[in-house]
Image (cartoon, rainbow, N blue to C red):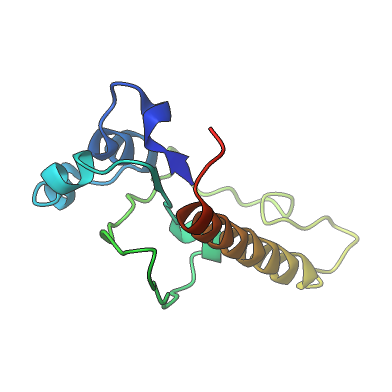
Length: 127
């Protein structure tokens, strides 16, 4: 959750472009609406769901403002070929448990953020 006042003079559209690499042509049509928002916004990057497609239901008092694509980072050099670069050591077989645990943790964090936003929207802030 981002308190828009914490951005200072930076507009929300500029923040999305710089922090999340959202292309300016994607922001073009919504820039006035985005930059006029006040209060708090929830930004859920794809990594919050382990880059898995999700359908979210947004209900009052929350409202959906937009969905934007994040620019994927491009590797700077050739692909690494060692077993350690693949996340394995020579003596251990992959278990598959770490990615499942990480995905669950990220999903729980995203849900907690949504609950916090709902609480702020319903009860306001103390400051």
